[in-house]
Length: 205
Image 1 (cartoon, rainbow, N blue to C red):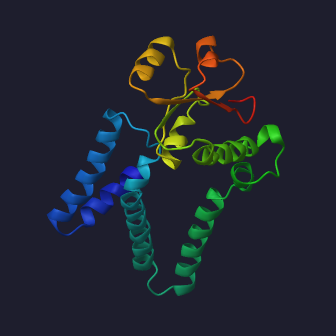
Image 2 (tube, one colour):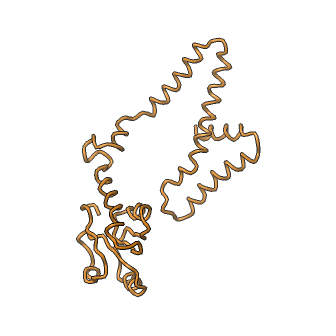
Image 3 (tube, rainbow, N blue to C red):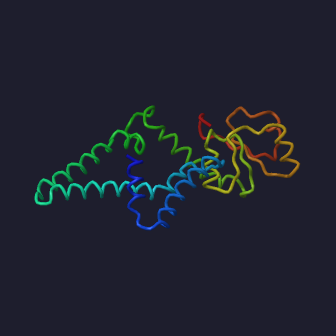
């Protein structure tokens, strides 16, 4: 359906410059983020307006065909259109998924770890007040949580432990270091009083 809607959208654009602008943008973004290393997970949001426009073109074409086939049968025409819209809405309505993603109504082990995510989010945002300035490099973050840390702050963050070689390089450059203390830090980190140890919010870190 997506391919069909994109084809109809392309075909119905009147001017070549619009066709080139829209679809070169679509192709460039997907090629760029496929090849480039990035911390931006939701890059596809950038092209969502084009996808929505193409889907709306498909819906518009469908309604146009219905209008042509049922010109003098207004009740039938409106019934078909309303029926299709209701069907699309119902097919995409998933109450359990909404509860799963956005509430704590489902049991703790079956709600997309929402409570854990809320705790993680609060901890990440608190780092700006825990660390004295924004020049720190943070190590030993929870897997993939280095991305939101860098998003919500100007810290550089890694989801792995600091090794000895990196430690020597960073200390030589007088880089400020912080680590998330999950109770299993190497001895050389524990012995260095200049490294700020931040207690992890829970056992998942």
